[in-house]
Length: 236
Image (cartoon, rainbow, N blue to C red):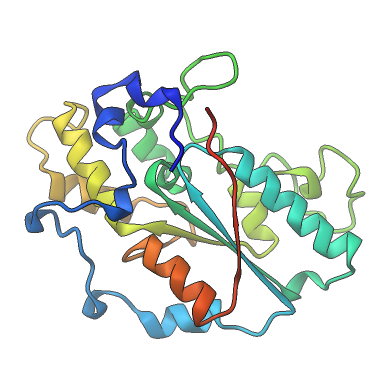
């Protein structure tokens, strides 16, 4: 997949240069989450609920524009096609660098995720905090959808979750990131890759779900649950 020039920004970024969900790693990292460790029945209940439309978003990398695209899709369904909001089934499938969008503020601070992953704003400054999660609007459903301050023009994960977005992140990517953060000297002294992995998966934003492998999950969502596939090219 396409990768931006930010990959050279740090040793951690270099270590994560390929799709984290497709790489192999030592078994001691607990890279592979087993069926015994994952509640597939609960997952099925969540993603299999009856909806009018179903769409998944494959977000593999530093792709903040994808969140704006999800917002636009919600608006198109709700206002352009008059689909009842509760009948819009939308899933953000975060893997690779995009996992960071769903790590909480404590993880961003502890592991300096913006610098470690090479996240830059349009001016070239490091993104130091999780600006991708926290809502910038109030959940007022009667707001004018053309109001740029309304929930309908808020492309943050929290605002999108309020509209029904399901957020998934990749266990395999988290394991690769844990190894890279230790190898890059970012993790606190004495922490092992399994320690960091446990830390990351325990500190996701509210209601985010860690799945065993995102590339497999995307296939299941398409084949078993009939979600339409959508992706957005990474920032270059």
